Image (cartoon, rainbow, N blue to C red; front, side):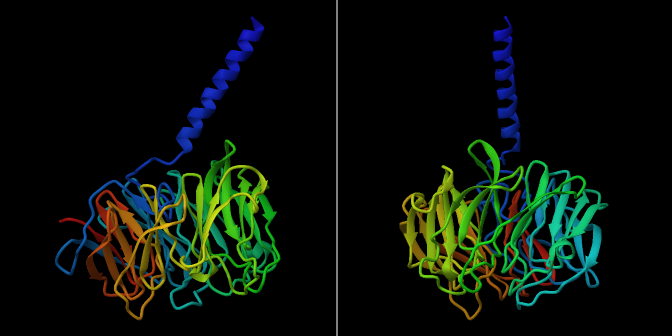
Length: 426
């Protein structure tokens, strides 16, 4: 009898674990956009119908003035919009309702302005678990804010562990696990991952992540991904010429893949982030001249066994690729687009957006089979990419823009240098 009871308890615990794991998994498509690349971290959605063309009189639902220059992407939870921006020289998190009306602002410590022409002190995008909003700034400030705008806690990683040594502005967005907010600080010298308790801000763990690289190879502006690895909560991190998987509970390395710079070229840093297609990690690298397909799974050093393919003739430097319905869409800095099979790395088709002197710094978004690409001069290009490439429209925001488009519930949110825009069918 006792043996049968023990088996039953184990089965019950296993069932509970499976249910809890499924609750933590992101929805296939969602009316929310809780972090930079959306609910599935792939920069795409199949839900909703979104406008293709707009101008001063058509399909612009509203625009709201912003208090200062920021490069972060808005996030959406329950039809509330959250965005980081400087307010009178200080880091701040702002909230807007679905009509663009400001709801509150939570002002934090002093801003550390951007150095790059497209950079700012607010490059990282905020993220939410539906209970609070979490933000990270170039100043080193990490903050948790309740949904009513009250400050839960804040701390400054640079005051605690030293100023960053990046050549340019911090770009890596914070990542949430079940209990923590995790920040990656990958730079020359002391690189690390730090996990802070979401409720208290207490430092749960901090692990060093240092690799010897040529000049600037240890700099990373990429955002980690939360994944499942060997049945457990884990983090996938790119930087220091290594792709690594870390246990979300304590930060220890479970898996690593190197070999991204065998000829030890200088200035090969990580800017664009990794995107997943099933168990394949597609990794842009080498200033837009390399693209790698790395199989996940296994353990330890998988450098010699898990590189499924490598391209030396394409890639993206700044924009992070999109995964949409099992295909990878790569937008290069000058507007070239490639549709790639993630299993083989082969190009299925390639084309290009109209060339101008301006580059693409924002990561593209695919919604309903259409790719939305924001050029730094404020032009938003819309192209059909499902089935075949077809340029559909070129829209002008009227101001510079480098933030990624956010498609939610039939509305397209676009952040310019001075305004937050909402496009939709009127």
